[in-house]
Length: 410
Image (tube, rainbow, N blue to C red):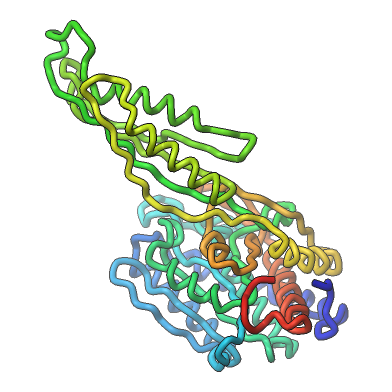
């Protein structure tokens, strides 16, 4: 893929950057409006209120907005520009993706929006309401410069990413399958880190059963579920392999009845992360195999596999997208660096269908999922401009190379 675009020259790119910087106050106003609405995943009313603000913003850009109702979470939204609403069979679109929910319950005490000039703090400023604002203004900047014409864009706003996107993943994957490439607007790092790969995640529930009895009356090996689970904990932790990027964490353990009773039950919740699908399959197979080898006579073990997100494996297609982002960053004087993350996002689902995807297109900051979450103020407008210029240039390059019809792989 050749880096650069005749359709969006350097002069236009600089104009887009000036345009977003001039609108930084209104971008921050929209961000404050979103942040001051609590949208904890379980708070349907709050997440729907965020959705109402986003519908207003997207319809103001001329996008049509489809509401996908949800009974026990906020409604998902799909915004499409006119070109995306008229997409011909086999024709590809550009997918923007971001989530409306946050991890902070209404009673968390973290509910302020504080603008300190060089940084802004508040729940969701980078995870990821700031990313939503950056994505919206990237499209607004393209529209203002006549660059949205001929580039069909769909923007998915989902409401349950923080709990696994189990209600929205099929929607996201369906839109990804129709897309030539995708941008996800999770936060970038302070140095402009943009994500080409993420680990996959699978959760295991390991349940041990034994036989209850009085602890003081047993002078021989006890059929203790707790003891058996201790053996399984050591065996599972031994599956960690830092060289391959495989991590296993027995993070939550419960069981037993009391100190004077042999434990009849014990359970552990285990998180597994891995770089490749093959490593994930091997890891799960090894964990399940452990269940068939109890160490303590009279006990048994079963392993429940709870599917999570598949890995977003970095590869040539994602890195070709990154080449455009790096080139645009150099031109706009916006820092960009390649990043691989152990955490998961909806980019993992997009990658699963084979669509090239970059994540971390949102503003920079740190401390997400904590009361110290902050955004570097200047990065909001800068990353919006970067996304705008990069998306248009990638689309133009794919168009020249005949990659906007048929398969979505770059």
